[in-house]
Length: 72
Image: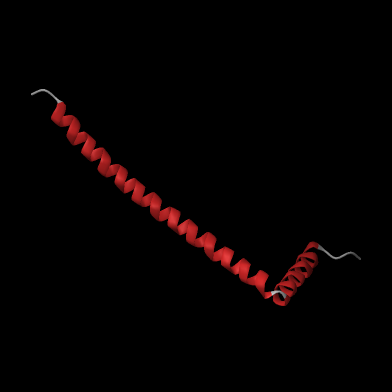
């Protein structure tokens, strides 16, 4: 009887964890990459909010400048 997909996934996960425990440098790189991706995502989100705020300020300033250009 052949093993099912759950047994295959479990076996693969066990061998992956075992190989990561025998090579701590690879484990450190994996952890570092997870933190780096999370930090980069957060940073891009914050920059997007800042860009949106700056764009709204720019639009208000442009509106004021255009109102000053209209003849009275």
